[in-house]
Amino acid sequence: EVHLLESGGGLVQPGGSLRLSCAASGFTFSSYALIWVRQAPGKGLEWVSAITGTGDTTYYADSVKGRFTISRDTSKNTLFLQMNSLRAEDAALYYCARVGDRTGWYPFDYWGQGTLVTVSS
Amino acid sequence: EIVLTQSPGTLSLFPGERATLSCRASQSVSSYLAWYQQKPDQAPRLLIYGASSRATGIPDRFSGSGSGTDFTLTISRLEPEDFAVYYCQHYGSSPLYTFGRGTKLDIK
Image 1 (cartoon, rainbow over the protein chains, first blue to last red):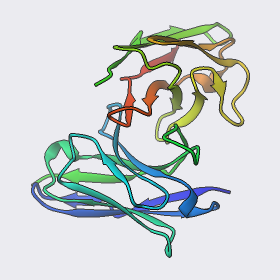
Image 2 (image 1 turned 120 degrees about the vertical axis):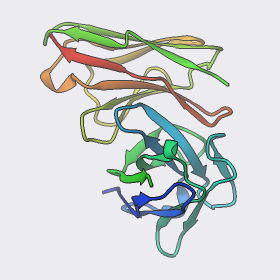
Image 3 (image 1 turned 135 degrees about the vertical axis):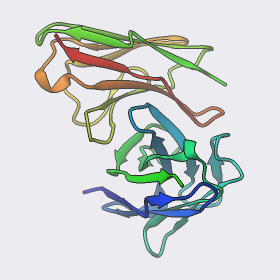
């Protein structure tokens, strides 16, 4: 059974940094692209970042480009999101999810339960 | 950048009724359109991909249609567990993924 478990959220001051993790199990980790999606309290979904199965290509939303870095460690079956220069508008529940097809950028078939990031002084 | 506009913002219906949710793209997205359901305090769940293909395990009362710029998610007969927020999503261009702002389906 596919399982994704996020961790690493918490309270951080504006301008601070945080590193989110997403532990994956139940599938061949390196065969699937993975993504981060966030949801501010009471708001809709916003795609944040994506990484290919091999980890050699990454993509970012304009709102986080240059501040966030996505990466993955196949030896640990774990996805990461390094978030720097955090702003109040980055506060959200961050989900990791699996891209549902190995051949391209398709919708997300499995999601974690999210980890909450709060940005406040 | 493609913008997805969902309507209505809120839809109030009785169980057993038919629900029709709309998603309009600012330019053609071909059939690269998905629908998700999100219940309170839960992660979204993929319902439809490729505009009209049901994801694994999704009941056949859910159906998707459309191509180009106009898409519809139809729930043929609403069950109590169907009342949730529904999002459409475009995938595969730049930016890689775009979501609509959602339609809240309320019990009347």
